[in-house]
Image (cartoon, rainbow over all chains, first blue to last red; front, side, top):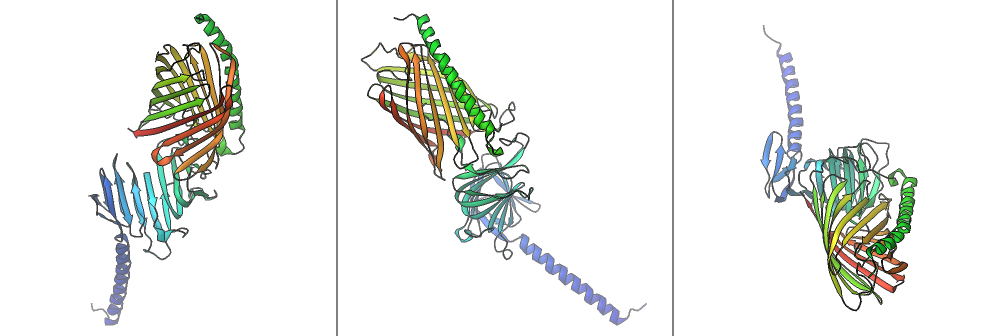
Amino acid sequence: MLRKPGASAGVAMVAELIVAFCGSVCFRNLAFAQMAAGSITGIKGSAQLIRGVQTLTIAVGTAVEVGDKIITATKAEATLRLRDGSTLTLGESSTMTIDHIVGAAAGAPSVIGLLSGHLRSAVATALRGTIGSFEIHTPNAIAGVRGTKFDTAFIEGTPCPGFPKCLRYTDVGVFEGIVEVFNPTNPSAAPVTVKAGYETTVPCEEPPSSPGPLGIEEMGGPGYH
Amino acid sequence: MVPETGNYMIGFRFVRPAAVAMGLCAAVWASLLLDSGSAQAQIRPVGDYYQLQTPGHFGATLLASGFGSDQYGATHESVELGQTITRTIGVVGRIIAYQVYNGDGYDTPIDPVRSGQQFNFGRGEGGIDLRPIEGTTLRIFGGHDFGDSNAPVVDGDFSSWMGLHSTHPVNVSFTGSHYYNNGKTGGSVDFRAVALSSAELLFVAGAGGQIWGGGQTAGVKGEGGLDLGALIRRWHLEVDLQGGYGVLHIYGIVGVSRHFDFTE
């Protein structure tokens, strides 16, 4: 049975359009997923980079892309310089993801996910002073940067000091500039602004604590006693 | 020579009011902690009391200190080592070298009737380090002197921060020692508040003093003055100063300590 030529051409045209649309979307997603985010500039010990189903061993110069996950081993440390000029140092036994990078989409911030462990961030000068230009996301906190050097640690499986029943918490300590911290799992809680020399803790679904001096427990009574 | 029983009796008579005073201070401090309006300023137990801490922490502290006044002069140097067991319990040990140049102060176990020369002695101590509440430590030591002082010694120190999650937390610390060599008991109290915290420096200021008595010391003696302290974060280096007035007239104390921490 013969088809009508007109109907066949119409089906083909629709099919081509669908293929073209899908191809365009898929290509864009592929391009996004493979977008260069930066490269490894320092490594101590061993660390792995997970890209899709691939697992790569990290070395100085290894390119890092948006969507990559970096995992450090015990007593290891990896330093990454992002395309936006920021520097990230991932501490031992830690996991981070490169979720987004400035420039990938208009107006969107660089977003780094910290799934476990400790991350030190030195944000690029160009991003400083721009609220929401650089963010560290942990499972229970978002640290938004106005330009700074700061540490983020996400600890899981250990009681949070002061909240013995809470077994996952985030510490954010600021060395330079200002960081705004809030708990995305508790939208009604007000964010806390942390200035240089201070730190805050975000326990489970609780709001961030009021900032206290960095590492104050290192000091107690006068040393001469 | 005063019989040992006499020494103990005099020491005991002094220890009782001192213990009562320390207890009252601790009670006042506890009530301040409990009565703080903000939930974030209240006592915050650390939790996980009996589970072994992993990874553990091994710490070492080096200290050099000197006391000077026109009636008493002494210096001491120490090495202290600490090992965590759980998050709230640790063990600690230290070796201290003391030099007493002249006179009789709050921290000397030398019998004051021995005078006119420099005394040197060492002290080895071990004890327990308890951290039951966030920002609070209690350490109790027992040990022995050797050299110009040669007898057992018991020491304790307590430190607690109030308002840890505030701009200007306040610390109170007590120390207490009993020297079996001369029957003396001495102690110190310091109140210090964070005046400045930056990325590089933590600066505290307040007031403190020492009291002592027992043994050959007639009555209870004391001194007090201003406290200043600074922690240089980068080097984990702490510098503490106290200057004031008391039975030894104008005096000054300086201490410099450096802390090292190792994660296992």
